[in-house]
Image (tube, rainbow, N blue to C red; front, side):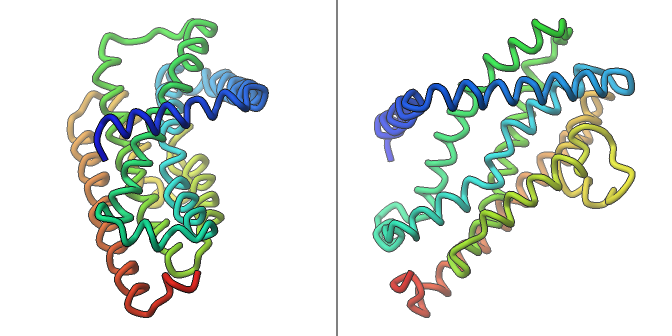
Length: 242
């Protein structure tokens, strides 16, 4: 898919958001209440900016866990999965394109919201914010790889979005998004959020390397498992009886 087609698809989805203005406003209000509430709750025990940056990272990454599953479920339900699989681009390539569009849409929604919160709560933004933003996007890209790994099982069970949604809750509460967890510490270390917070606190590049390694492993595992399950489903004819 060319950049022109990608831009057209982004514009189509962006205009589609405009059809649900009221829903979008209340969704942002609920996020505003939740984020400011957590910032106020944890401001006495942790650096406010660290919590702010961690919540921004989580917001950008949360769709990465569920989006691949929802995309594949929709294609299966609409019975268009076979045409996508049979296309010259392939289903994984089409999925990656949809991920890129979703990332940009989330960024368009997140930047005004978090900028308002930063101004409203007088959060001091460090000079290294541009570097942190790049790291956030690295985390987000990695989480989309994890979402691809989970979503690949949709090709077998046809429904994995509930599993992905459950994992997203576990990540929010037990993966170090808000604070270093006292339970499931090994679970937290399997995700990049806690390493992102360690990097903010120390500036140690070893944590950046850990994030890079985890993101790479998510995508390697996600791509390999996705292709294996896809080929197995095609050989058994499951794709043609969805």
